[in-house]
Amino acid sequence: MPASSKKQKLIITDVHDWATIFINGKSIGKLDRRRGDNTVEIPVLNKDAQLDILIEATGRVNYGKAILDRKGITEKVELVDGETKKELKSWQVYNFPVDHAFQKNVKYTASKTEGPAWYKASFTITKPGDTFLDVSTWGKGMVWVNGHNLGRYWKIGPQQTMYLPGVWLKKGENEIIFLDVDKPSAKTIRGVSTPILDKINPDESLLHRAKAQKLNLMGEKPVHSGSFTSGSGWKEENFSQPIKGRYICIEALNGQQPNSPFASLAELELIGADGKILSPLKWKILYASSEEVTAGNYGADKIYDQQESTFWQSQSIGGKPSYPHQIVLDLGAVETIKGIRSLPRSDKKAEGMIKDYRVFIKTTNFKF
Image (tube, rainbow, N blue to C red; front, side, top):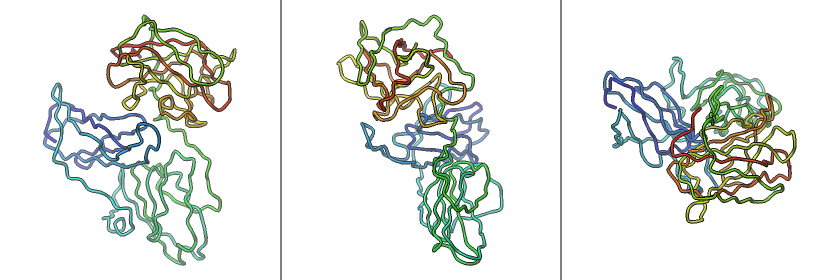
């Protein structure tokens, strides 16, 4: 990368699924597809520097229009310096095989690291037997024991242990290798007699709002106000006239159940000028006033994942915020919208079904 006297931005289109960015071997940031991340700020560079991007493929989308789920960097990498945008090309690309031979030949040192790394250690046992490795203090990665790949782990859970058959262990010294692409909270490991299969660690990075962030709708005029009918099934509402915009706010004012603080929504679709449903592939949640990521995976991005069985729900553990609830989306481009289609949660529970609501659409972002 060229030297620069001011900070630059790196834009990656798109990351599938997890990326760590390095400048001269030092981690400066990471991008997470779940949040729709695509931009990292590059610090001031006094001289030319080496840029490295480590990509990890978390899994593949197996439904809807995104089912053709290519991995890595799907399009391009751009460097933004002031008003100048330049695509970076002529990359050298390497892959990390997941066989033991590759991991074993990595150069291990005693130096400390703060980013993605391989870790190797040994442990001694007197009597081999089946066990479960507790990996709850590790971040995100893979484990090998005596040359056997045990699989992948992720701190968010719900599985916090990995099964290790006794036949893969031996009396005396045994080898264990970790490849962690995140950051372990503690580099420790222990064997336990029973698995931990149902522990979810809250991942605050999934919240679509900064701490204490609040949407300011003062002076904003809704393009549509309405009331959803009670009951299940898709509901369609058309605006009085088509509206152009890139940013849309859905505000739930109250629920079908009196005095209930909860709101939920399984799917949201936008009707384009031609009457067809707009593609959600470039959509991104910019803000959600409340979402439940502790008791379950009910984040705001569930409203456009094209799965009717998943849904967004406002927070149910902790403060239990009450109405109104707002969600702000960036559609990725200016679109002409003439209506919305929505689907309440489909688990036959009435809790959280929205009654009165408002829709705001703008070509510029909302104020927070």
